[in-house]
Length: 253
Ligand code: PEP
Image (cartoon, rainbow, N blue to C red; front, side):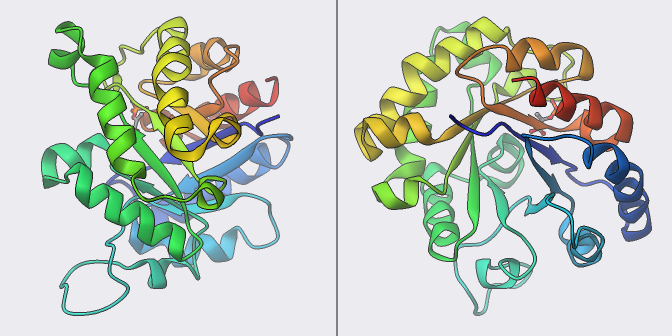
């Protein structure tokens, strides 16, 4: 019912030549994967070149962040208007943005609404820290983030939305969450909160990804869970062989 989606978050990695090289390595393998939507999210500086390399393929491009205003005196920012000619997707509210750049739920909500208004598909990241997890507060934190992130989003806009559940303690640590635990958070927390905002039908329609140390060796187990619609992949998306293997695992879903 929901097409699996695998997105690669390259974070602060790859110069323009390096990014082009990685795409060249990725393309032959990714083009053999069917039934999976694939999104590459390189740094801003490489978007233009990669958009050219991806022409004629069905691989999508995404940005890793965006400001909510479309233009103005906001030095250093990039707007939805600038991105929409290059990308179809934009990652918003990644935990690294929350942690290192002080992004609040309110900022993320503004960005989500701005992305939707400009026909960009936001991949909205939510997830609890280790401390919150150990205090038994994962459900509370995740529901607050989903609620705040989607405030004011209409049911129609909901169809253009992706959520990524990324427990902070699993990102870049090699310590992935358990597929069963992720499935439970999505079923018991994320979809019910979405249902309250977007209605039950739309809550079932929206794709919810898992992110946090997804590798070729554990990907299939995550994709085996009915509530997990794909993955947001960090580290492993920088290795062509690994990322293609993860995308291929999603095509078995
Ligand atoms: C991420 O950056 O969103 C992520 C999930 O990273 P990693 O796969 O490296 O844990």
